Structure formats: structure tokens, C-alpha cells
Length: 269
Image 1 (cartoon, rainbow, N blue to C red):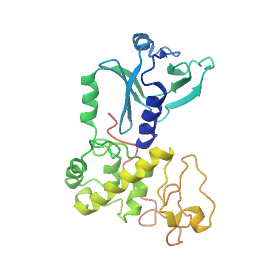
Image 2: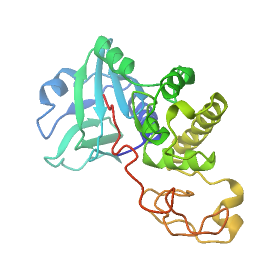
Image 3: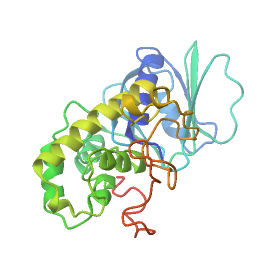
Image 4: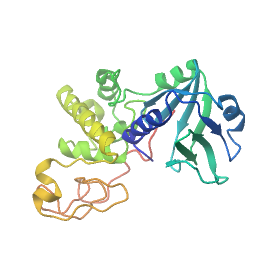
């Protein structure tokens, strides 16, 4: 499932491609056809993201709410657009650009009130200027749940997924199995500040990089990481590989296979 930096990058890309331009809105698959017909010909006025939720704003109070889930894909291209396949839930097309949405968990036309309700159910997002990290810490500091699971709970902090949670905890030497209530205010401030910086870099580069400059491939004389998730990381998907810091094999906390840390992202709505 895409992490929050991907959704914020998509909001930027949709906005740059379509804001202020009357666009053709269609649903070749048919599941969004009625809403697409209402929006067809209207300009995109804004694009907004909160955690893993994307909102495309049309006219005064009409929003397309998109959650990609596990299988959703977004593909941009130049016109002329090829004939859409019957898997395309939503196509937007301007005179120069088109974008296809396939397989989202959610693609729905919602009102301002419904959008506000979604924001209210989500925790603060490190990539949003209105985020208040103290709101997340109040929930963390009262919980016996592991910090690893809390970082994945979208009601606590929105946008963090498997990669960012593993990497930020490693970067700060925090045991993922520590209960949230044992995380100090100073530790939380450091984790939050680091997430803000790392995720902003993720938006800029459209990939996750978490290693410090001294541990980058060119600095260490090692080959770059090759992975579908891209990016240079310390521990994510690096079990038994040499640690960039100490040289020992990367292993789960405790050495043996750990218990689940919280499973898939929780609280997605």
C-alpha cells in the first residue's frame, strides 16, 4: 500500500496537470459513471491529501475521494490517450494530459461535510501544515500498544506505513515493541521531526530514502539498493544483510522471528 508521501505527490501531480482547466471526466469501468457525468467538463479547483487519502476538488463542494488501498494504481500520460481498458475506474483528460485510476479501494464523490468527517477520523499527517504532533503523542503516551503498531494506526498518525515506521524507529534506536506509554516526549518530538523531513524528501524524490549521507552507496562504496520500493533504507526488507552502521547482519529485535507488530495499516477511514 502506498505510504503518505506518494499520496501527497499525487495531489501535487493532479494539481499541476489539471487545476483551472476544464477536463473530461469518464469512468470506462462504469462504477463511477454517474458521478463522472456530473463532473464532466468542470475544472479541477484543488487537490488535497491527508495520510493515504487523496481528495480532488471540483466546483464549490464536490470532492472525489480516492484511497488506493492495496491494489490501486494511478498512471499519467500525454494525449492522445489510448483507448481505456475496462479496468479504468476514473479517467481525467485535458488537452495535453490524461490520468487513469485503476483498482482503488475507494473512489467516491463526497461533500465538504463528508470530507471534514474523514479528516476528523485521521491522526495528524507529518506532511500537512495543520498537523499537531501533540495530538498524536497524547494517544501514544496513554497506550500499552507497541509503538510500531501505533505508528501504523492511521487514527494516531496518518500516512506512515511499514517502511517509514521501521526506518524511523531504527534511526532513533527505539525498540518497536516498547509500549507507546514508555515513549518520552523528547523521543516523540525527535521521531515526528524526522518523519516530517523524511516524508518531505519522499514527496520531492517520489521514493523513500532514509539513510544518512554517510551511509549512501557512493559514500560507502557499495552498490545501490534494487527493490520495487526503491530508495536506500537501513532495515526494511534487509533481514540478514550487512548493517550500514555496524556491519553485522540485520535481524529482528530479539534475534528470532518477532510477533506481529500490528499487521496491515489500521484505521484507514
